[in-house]
Image 1: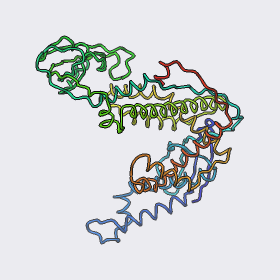
Image 2: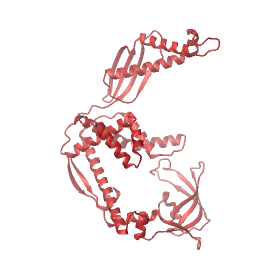
Image 3: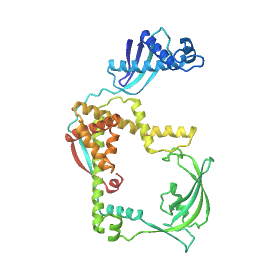
Image 4: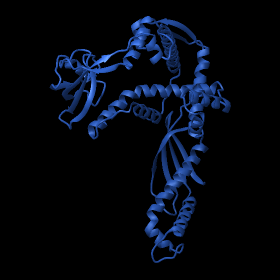
Length: 434
């Protein structure tokens, strides 16, 4: 493609404006090909196929043809321009182009984000703390209690109608947010007095009787975690239904065989302890990696492309599966959520870009054998047929993403090998939170 002019203007280290001018001859040739193609395919009453006059084609399809030609010319010339100037573009370009004028050059500008140029400095000798996360008998007891709760049976309570703490109560709940449309849920099971329902609503069930109708006005604090509820008042209309008692199975060898895939309770406790220790080691490893990345990022300041941060914010919110009301309130809540996750999104993007740069500087390459081995590991870990996983990674974009992830992991491992990792004592309550 013949480009009359390409000018790259630097708006920031990670943002450029590219001005492109396509020769009039290129525009005329593309227009002619488009008119001929439409003329051959058009079916217009009164004209034989392929015999529609050019003037008729222009009158009936000219506007659409010019739009299509403009899109193709911009796409092709833009890729040509960024290859010529070796611009590592991230995100979609913002195109500003006028309509095509036959006989004239096509001029447009594209504002783009580009990958930052990162000069890797000293990465050896970084000292990081590894939290000492010990597993004790109390942790094993807590995990056993959770397993026991998960297989509890519910028995109807027929000898009383007053709700006591620990009862499992079936309730019908109708909520109304600031006078809005009511939302009804039926047969919701809550444990009275457990403190697990929003704003401890179920604690207020203790002492109520079966069949009671309650109306509660609950003001949510301004700093409540869900932006769609923060600062709002919700009216709860609660109908108390059936009462059930939770019956826990005996904690014995039979329980271990039936629910823990173990031969005895002692064996089950040993397995649980091993699992908890493995989880604790994984959390400690993650803490080391996070601390290492934090120091690496602090040593390498650079600008981060806005488009990459926006994309990471979108991915985070999609993973949260947030349900927001429609209209201005929902849009406001969504923007608030984006603002809340943005600092974390920027940290993650910054770390990824830095690891990419370290991988390049260290000559890290992920060959096909390594890629195939990882695909096999993923298939085994996820319990899926290897052919399904391999079919997914036949997609070029999926293979690129996996190759990039493995490259970042290897780059971090190389820096970690040169780091000084020291044990860090952690109070038990903090360790459980971690």
